[in-house]
Image 1 (cartoon, rainbow, N blue to C red):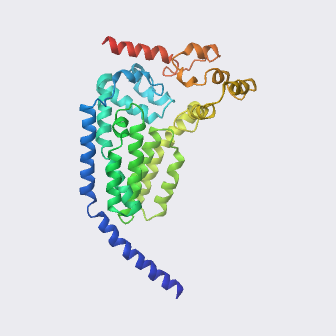
Image 2 (cartoon, rainbow, N blue to C red; image 1 turned 180 degrees about the vertical axis):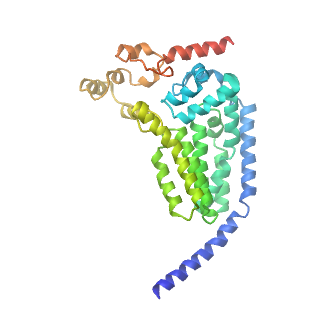
Image 3 (tube, one colour; image 1 turned 45 degrees about the horizontal axis):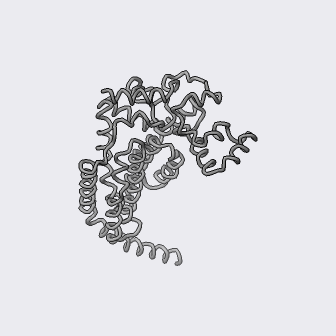
Length: 335
């Protein structure tokens, strides 16, 4: 009797939720289109009339990326051997540079970000709708996101901040749609693919984050094709991790984890403490003498003075970044 009573109560709860979900979803497409149009107009206005533009002269100056001429000369090797950023991000830029050239590619990159980033308000609306079950709160959240001053700057930034923001929000939106649509597994599979692209694009997001999502897809009522598709999505970042493990001994999308942690460890530490840690062997001498050592990558002579003279067998990694960056910068100005 107790079990039958519990089942009856569960049926009553489900019957009350379904009409609410259907009511919430009634105007979602129209509101999302409206928010997208608002976001697109704002980003285009910022881009064309307020100077929020991407500069082609900075592309060769970013230490997370190979020099532009190396990407153009070695498009596949740049994505395969470069390990200061995730290979997916380098491959993305390699594709743009080789398709559109070093001058037009940054503009294409920004316009892609504009048309994708314009959907941030719509995605925020769907996520808030699933969390709060309030259409008013969802609309307010979507508008607030569109009014964020960081949105146009993220679209005009060279690095992975904009694309990774869009992929992360898109994955969260797909999960929200899974809840709102009566648990349609296709949205979980979509979130899996977006999450896999995110892991390949930015090393901060680890492969392990996809495992619970893959487990959820296998536990719910998913088809065989949906299971296979989710496993295939996981294989892309797994291949990237395996490549870095084989080449560099790091099971991750990039090799800069130690560099990032070092910045946190020495942040605002007094010089006396750094010298003590240097004397005890806790940190490398270059870290004690140059706390912002990650900003001197262009000064290879400083690294050589500390004994960092080894050369990589790969052409993508055995160049002096500073010389290449300055050469690229000079070439751009001469042309």
